[in-house]
Every structure is written in C-alpha cells, then in structure tokens.
Image (cartoon, rainbow, N blue to C red):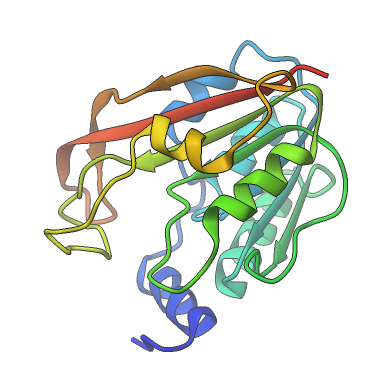
Length: 208
C-alpha cells in the first residue's frame, strides 16, 4: 500500500475492504440524529457510505466527501441502487486543501483521522462556520485502538472531546457544546470480528 501519497493510500484502504450493498451507519450518528428534522448535511470522510445513505433515507440532502475516489464512486453506486441518487452527492475532495461550499444543518466527521499532514482543527473550525443557526457539528473520534484499525501505534494519543473542542477555539456565544463524552460499545470490524471500543463524542450547536 502506498504510504507517501494520501489519495493512493486511502484508495488502497477502501479497495482492500470488500464493498457491501448496504453499508451500516455509525452508531453515534444514529443516536444523535434520529430525532432531528432533516435538512442539508455534510459528511466529512464518507468512509463506506453508510452514514450518507442512512441520512438520505431519513430525508436529508447529503453532500459526502472523501479524499478517496474509490469511496466516492462506491457511494454514488450505492445511492443510485437504493433510489437515493437525488439526495446523495458524493465527491472526491481534499479537505486539507479546500472545503465544500454551502451552508448545512448538520456536519458529521466520524473517525476523521489520517496518517498524513492535515490541520484537522482548521477543517473542523471551517465546518462549524458552515453551519446554519441551529445546526450541529458532530465529531466522533477513536478513543481506543480497534484490532482492525490502520493505526496500531501503541503510543498514539486519542484527544478527548474537551481537547478537540479547545482546539477549535470557537466563540461560546455562537457555538455551544451539547455533548462531550467517551462512551463504550461493541464494534464489528470489516472481517466480522468484534471488540469493545471507546468513542470520543463531541456535539456542537451553532446558536446564531
């Protein structure tokens, strides 16, 4: 696998995982968004595409971006196959270089990590700025290392939700932290194996 070029690396990661016809949404998305009214959503790092498809089924208009063209093409195919093509716009996009245009009611960033240089705080800060009043930014990070993770560095630091929020340096008069915790769950890996993992969950709402 190419370890020097980000596009080739992430294309390789996605190509190495078999495509599923109906990928699952992330658990923290489901528990956070189920009761929200649908609107415009932006999915940063679309992964297998399960989050975008789940949102579209609930009436959200979803822009889903990923540096991997393999991931974007797979999601486009899934959306068309499930009759959701009009609600899902999947794009290859390098968030380290630019950010999608538009305003959103929800921006999600699940496990938005990379071994390559990227100012993640700047990307998430821009995401917060792209929210409409009342919109939410949901950031879900790894709080532990799963057996199937691409990053098995035993010394890796998993920033806490409070650390992530502090790094965004958002004006508390405009953006309010609604949730910052570290719940545990049993997760299933690409090979079907299971393990207990920790999620670091940060939910921020734009007040005005």
